Image (cartoon, rainbow, N blue to C red; front, side):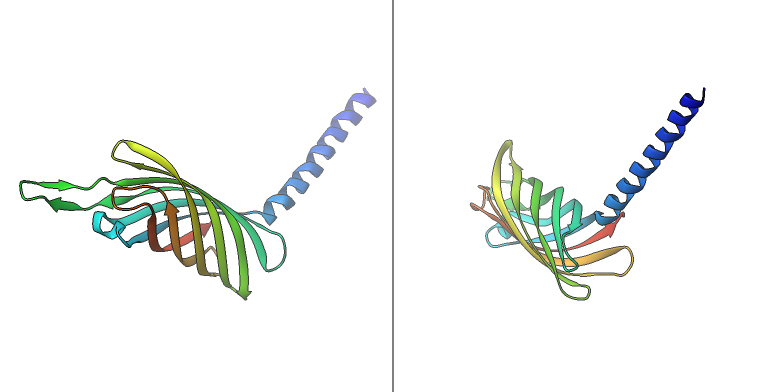
Length: 177
């Protein structure tokens, strides 16, 4: 009976130490969620208007001023309408699913610069393609709860308007923990 009690207590102690160690690992990881509103640039602005994207981001600090970041996002650029002389129609909406990986550098205190590279799955008018994506950000991290940023993004993917999707956007990330 003593051996059984000893094993149960030992099991609880081991579980407790693992939980504390796992909690310390989670404290290093920052998970955030937020919206991004984008305006199309170049020829894309003739066929599409406002872009709305939701993003889930993970950030892991590798030093006091540098974090490795990865994000997964999805959204769309809304279609504009046009008149071809006979009737009014719409250009196709562009749908996006993105995965990006990069680094976040804190320049001074709460001001940061982020550079991300990734791949985007782009859908438009019944077709789909993949495109290389790059996106530099500049932003400010608040003491509690989140950060705000401005970003440029370019996706090398064939659309009705062009062979790339360029946009400038503003976003907010709410830090879940």
